[in-house]
Image (cartoon, rainbow, N blue to C red; front, side):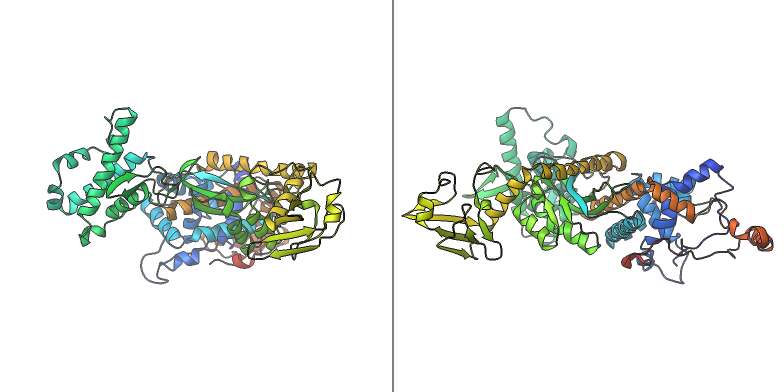
Length: 577
């Protein structure tokens, strides 16, 4: 049976006020705890969690708002499950934030794990991130017209293996399961093979010589033994369903190949390959290493008292930043946070990303990656007058109209023929991109080349440099997330669990940033004045005050009032899920 206490309900007496000293109570009320209790808690999707329980049968569950809030606090405080359980039971500030009584509270690690699994399986972290971010943008009256985007690497809780040890660990895991479930088949294997993989995973091949030739031979031997095991159990239906056997096949297919009936280890297996059977979803970034990453978009306006993360898209490490812009913009558009200008580094500066932004009304400002084919001050296609709709040339820089200009939409190429009389004696012929081909003065260009030339010239201006300076600020956000919230290395494995923790940590980062602003502290002070509701029952209302005291001692919630929202509710967060 589920148990829900609506956090929007006011208390006649705040039970924490007589327990804490006035400075302590003021600090807890105006800190992140007050923002969490009075603004964030009501946004958590407890109705979705309540579906896991009967409305009127069985023992009562933990109070669902407090459980959902504890899971969020656990991540942005980077607590272990044990630390979260102890904070729920013993920490007054956590109990205040979760709208609990400062009395006997109980919590077990198993309960936290159970509710965490519900949130992961139902993918509720994405919903929480969207609701909390949208509400905080409204609370702070945030300027979202200018934003910046970047990615940061995330390590999961897995060991990092080289290629040889990765293959060896895959074999060992398979042999361990085979020994447990089919001892006869295990005993039929070659004794030398069984002994080779008997040591623990951390000690596999620990006695191997350091020479490059011996390492190469070891790698070849392990690859051949892996192929031997795959072939030996290829017809065993029971074994083929094991995850260890599937991982064995996957690692072999990614790291090795069969060439003329011989096993060869691939020279370059790529980055989108398994890094550890314990975390099969993790891939590799060629520069940062194995694991995951997250695309982060953040506001960057001088008008904001604090900058908030408006979008977080978790990905595997091998995903390329060059293809991330469409997904980031779609997420922002879905939550009504689409900017007018988006700043990014060179990875986000592809022509495709800029065009996607233009289609949504977003000016993507990022350096054009790669060397420029010419000096930006030289004449190029950007100096010609081009009809952007038809991609045909109207006039050259000297003002001459072409003989003809035709655009092939299939290849995106435009071929323009200029008049010979105009080009032959032109003073700019040596630096002009028009070339004399078989007696004709021809200019060939693509729409992409024209746009890139225009952007290269723009990014050489002082105005672009001044505007682009704000992009660097997101690097401090990436560092803060890793130092303060443990985003750099997450204590979890597997894509669903890692993605859940990434989103919850980033959501908590927004809560902490918003709580540090004067605007939020002032708002909470108005919403929750010192003395609870006592100021409503002073002076001529002494009788009502006396009644309040009497009912308060009886533990009744006679004066519970539903407060109006101090700011407009966003449509998708107007009520709990």
